[in-house]
Image 1: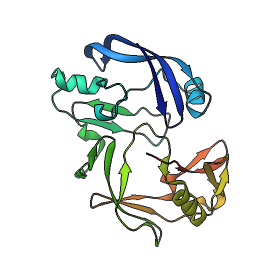
Image 2: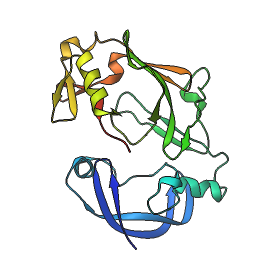
Image 3: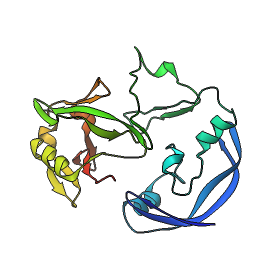
Length: 227
């Protein structure tokens, strides 16, 4: 069966296949997956050409699957191949160090203290309530909004007008339409960015939202209209 899927960065098309998918020693027999035969030119095309990966492992909900195909993780839950319906990421700040994806639990060796419980507001995307957002002393979001936690997105994305306003506050300059850079000499002096998600505060310092790439300092925000 043929398919065509529209990602935020462009359309992908090909055919559906079935095989045993093995992840971390867990075998999922008869798992449907999409073989890609065509990627339209754009950011995703460049990512596939330059990236050190072979595909995408979906972790969203089946409710937003265009073809109602269960993900390998959902199949693991349904077939009782994992002990808990939980997955967790451990990401390194240094890209040369290995990160970790845990399916079926949490590796407590990677954190101290307790985890924050942020309830979902919709079982479509991993959607939560963004109660507020402040950049230094300025309110960027002052009334509750919808936010999506997405492991497959490289940057922080938001409505283009709000992202442009935030970039102006940071003194960032637009390049290539949607990306922004800041003066590297001033980057470390930028204020903290505080998100309030489901009643919990999460703070990003300048070193967390300014990415040093090829001699430039990329402001880690991009404008995207999410339907």
